[in-house]
Image (cartoon, rainbow, N blue to C red; front, side, top):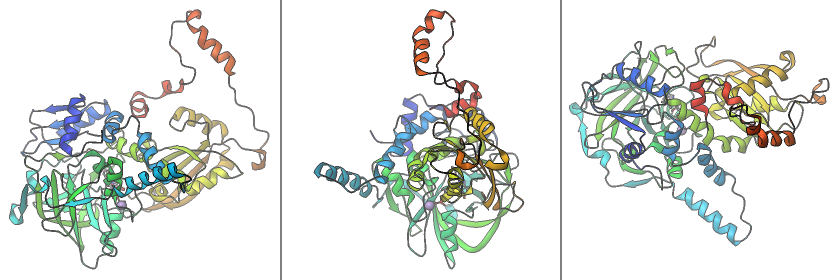
Length: 502
Ligand SMILES: Cc1cc2nc3c(=O)[nH]c(=O)nc-3n(C[C@H](O)[C@H](O)[C@H](O)COP(=O)(O)O)c2cc1C
Ligand SMILES: [Mn+2]
């Protein structure tokens, strides 16, 4: 089996698996859908297909990614780490030794070659073509998510551009505030590739926003790939089959052939508008700021197109699992650069940029600090505000356990590093937007070469007695279930446990 190839087969799969509920009652895309969805997400509930959003003839799909199970179903894997393993296999490729190795190597290379998108002559995304005065974004059930939002926002688009210098494609997920029938704002934050493409134009850049894709391609739009790597290639690699494209009707861009909806158009470099406020994934409203204006020259659609949406807000929200997917999928790439890293965790409550917990195989004095600097120098992880480093045996996903070592192993005078660097566009805490303080906490055990007194031994029961008590547990008649290895999860609050269980 391979992952779903378009939004409709994905919906069908979710429905077969009891992971989707159709809501036929008429509901308002203004605020009401947010409240329904937020309650459903926080309860670990199903994907929702609103069949009758008020004021639109298009159904609205939301919460397709809201649980770990659905995120795994999206990639057709048992665990998100299995997706990472597939990438690791290619990243870790060594020069082949014998014939068997060569054949295996060729297969891997072929899987990369097969990942390249293919352009076809036609596709369902263009069954309906609306241009000129026929363009009306008001026909779509675009949500106004939170009471303080400036307008309705398109929240789950895959925005396609080409670097004007190299022609390399970029796909990113950037919210789009509806301005009128045929224009939106484009929320290209300063660290993003989409913005770099835009800044590289002399005058005008063509843009296409694809809505309603197969789940892997939607995910890929949110993936923090290096600038020169096409997100559609990652999508093809992870799907095991290339993304199919068709030529845009009014732009010189290829667009996903199976999209439910495509908005084609252009952005002029010097045309800016006030974008926001918008209730963001930080849990706060982002204030209005100038962003470019997207002019829609064509809307192409499938017949009876389904509009996809997502609500972000105070975590945990649906984007938690998109973020967790990135955390897992990018672990092999992180390890390629910093091989002493064993594992890392970006807590959902930290909105992904506020905190990174990382475990390392510590080998020399100051090693934890080396890793902090490495994180602060690594792709989008460079925006991380606080880095906590623990030893390899600590489970970074178990926050109680991490907190234990942060408390027990840290001398704040010696183990806390205050640095500075770039911060997330949306971080409202720093005095200056985009730039401010960084916090590093070295919670590893310190060796004598780090100027400490002899480090005490940690308390552990020996294996022999553990095994004995496991064997005899029933005999004692205490009447409760225990698990010697997995006690710590019990302390974690319910919603988090829900998000974290893996
Ligand atoms: C639901 C969702 C909404 C997002 N909204 C924005 C946004 O409005 N602006 C932005 O710059 N990034 C946003 N992101 C993050 C980008 O999609 C992500 O950083 C991606 O890697 C950008 O692609 P790029 O590096 O090719 O520009 C969002 C991510 C998700 C999951
Ligand atoms: Mn990119």
